[in-house]
Image 1 (tube, rainbow, N blue to C red):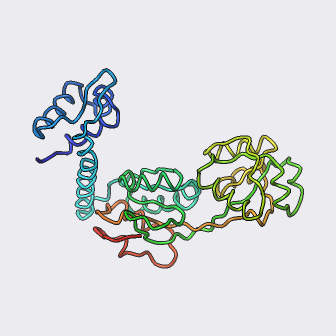
Image 2 (image 1 turned 180 degrees about the vertical axis):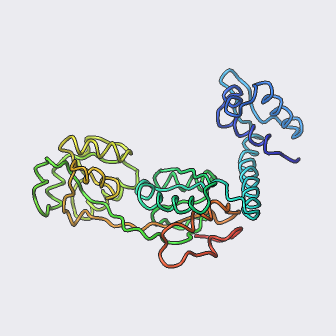
Image 3 (image 1 turned 90 degrees about the vertical axis):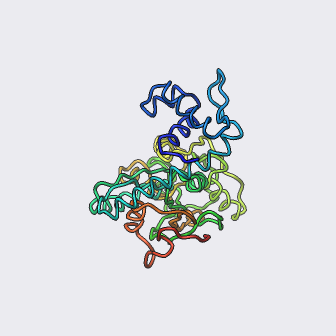
Length: 313
């Protein structure tokens, strides 16, 4: 059976929204038109793709089997179109990239700006998330490139290059906090304070607790848990809580005089970041153009960036 983009988009929209009504609205179609498209697919396949009920549309086992292939087919169709347009000199397309917050707010904006000066027709879609979410998004083809910390070998991903970026976690407090007037502060002193931190299980929290554990200290007293760096910055600025974030995430508050870094050498942690792509499939011309504008240690590994490469990280 052959598929066209309209059918694949219709199928995936129903999967995403769980009902014909919401899916039809997202595609700017009438509900009967979308229903006919799905029914035609089922007739041609000779299998039911969805169970219809008052709760909405739920995938059958056949629908589950089709889902990953539908995502891949639609993705490759778009990549083929982007690549042909790039060869024709039509500098447009979509560059989809995922990045951790500190990268998204530091090295990525100038890289995007440089790319758009060369190819103003390219559209950028950014997913800002933690490492674990980014890996899932890259494998599922929700993004084409990912900038994250150093990862263990993952079968479906390949490391393109290390990014040139000096990033490190530091302890910070409000400008009015009693510790703000001290010079160097010990880890024992700050661990007696109350903290605003990312939730347990998130990479920053795990890194912090590993540092603390290596010093022989107990876990921090956490009053507020949130993944939002801006929320952590606000709580620290307005209370006597302490925070621990990458410098680019609280630097705006420091420049505004709301918070101050605390010199706690034992809790200062440097990180390296790397550019990743999937180990199989075609990388779009738009994503390639963005990768070439990123600050890279040494020379960009064009072999690992090139189209159609297979390999492992």
